[in-house]
Length: 497
Image (cartoon, rainbow, N blue to C red; front, side, top):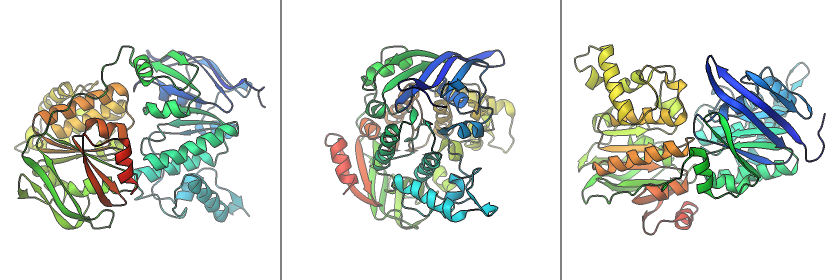
């Protein structure tokens, strides 16, 4: 069944969702037309994902009605939504690591031939989807070991093979750099021309202004505003999201001290992902690392913090060589890493906040080897308050918003009072309010004389927080820019050199 031109293909009316006595969606009305991109915006916890999950069949609404292409719509499962022509790309990666890329792309809907799986067709179609996104990789390869960015592109390729009439994209560019994002946008514009409707969720507001036709803003489970165009000033969008006037996005960062805290000389990765990297970071300095996806940024900071091996080079802390060979050795020397994937690498999701904070601080809360629950809770409570975590210590990490999860990861490492803090994509997939809190934490660290290294795919962010920026390109150090000479043009010139 199809709808008339200009009529919504999807309509939500008075959608409500409750968990026990708590109502998390309050009477949501939403229309999506064929061939338009509608941004769904709001802070973490605003209800965006719940609305998306209702549409995609992951969650059933408590009350309210939906229509899809003119007919009543109530999917009992994600598969039912997919069969109806609605696909969703989740912010959290849901790939199966021990299956191939092609198997992941077609899981649950493998093409058949002569009673078995038609692997040739499956791999050809998967490869075609990858090529559309500029990903030159064999569809036969296992997913295990691929970078977060490549896994995100595979999730997107999976959605492209659905031939869906409505796509829900939840933070699709959170793990992508500039070139990969542009490839995705090309596909979005093509899908629009084909009449596909798109719901686009992102905290990157410059993207919203570029590609969306309308903007719907949610706050505290309610739809609070709708703009009939996409090129709305960012300040206006943000103030609508947070319900108040906004100050500066980035706080004032202090000038670094003259003393060198941390130094890397001639560092080369054992797997060749980067080579001959040299830089130093002063006390109280925020040192940014920029570059396109695949430039070696994450591999570099993992090697610096002992998570990945190096083939040669040295790392010094206040003039003393430490060159850690394991994360434990780095931590003992006061060097900690907040990883890019908080859910897989930063937290034990089904354990409490107190347990997560405690795991990184056993030497403090159990110096004699005896662990007392009261001591764990007291230690956690103090750090929950210190870092502004919205939650209580006995709450599980998977019950929290992305921004608060990130604050817990920060809290567990900063409670150790490290001398060097490495932040890999510190604000990926979190809202404006939480980003501001994390920037304040970075300022506090700099004021204390801590050396802070920030890796970010968000060029505005790395420009906004850094005293200096090192740009990487294809595994090599392309240059280091002072704050005064760093801008989007100078960084991108080096990143593509």
